[in-house]
Image (cartoon, rainbow, N blue to C red; front, side, top):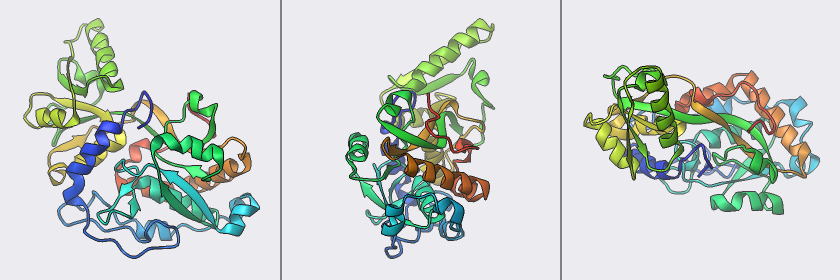
Length: 323
């Protein structure tokens, strides 16, 4: 979905397939935010895969000073219309009922709206339609694991809320004791053909050999499924993947018993941004202030921790901070 250097399109399909057994069978009734109200609880088999963040969201309080900066038409309407491409676990996807949006982005959107004293209504649309829908005024915001890049900044503005990038996934227990990129030297690493992960692995191989260390063997396949099978059987020592997807796969595959993510900041990280029409700077600034308020009071961190993606937390809500 996002442009290079992040490639989630292949991964979300697998994440949904491997995680489907962990999804709940029903969700509670619809709420005013258009996102189905309460989050579904996790199943006993995978208690951390789909967290119940109800209490975290309910604890978020309106920030009167920040809410006063929201343009009057949104305050009067009491709602922000947000477009997403609901297919990327754990960013944003549907619960088992097929109609309730869930994910850490969904929770962040709800919390930001609460800071502003309004609710948020999610609209599901094709990723390629998000920017044009903003430009046409069809929606107020977008939030769909979209990379904030200079190219996109020429079309829309961004409020940066998350830093994603490449992460290392290993077998549960980390038997090969991989602690970061430098410890991949001499190891066999799986990537999906043609991705930024493959490019990074090849660059890391060059660093290993230049430092006089054993070469890194790169195994490029056509799918994440092949890579996971190779990792489970020990044919490779690690898989390179995007942070949110790697976390979700680790939590859901084999009920969380197959894989784990190596701790550390994302490699070659870049920000995801909430999209705003370039002609609507007051809305962008209000959303930025609301997110910064959420970061400051700890609600932001609690949401990311609940979904297991705290490695991608930002310290500051920047406007157009991508490169």
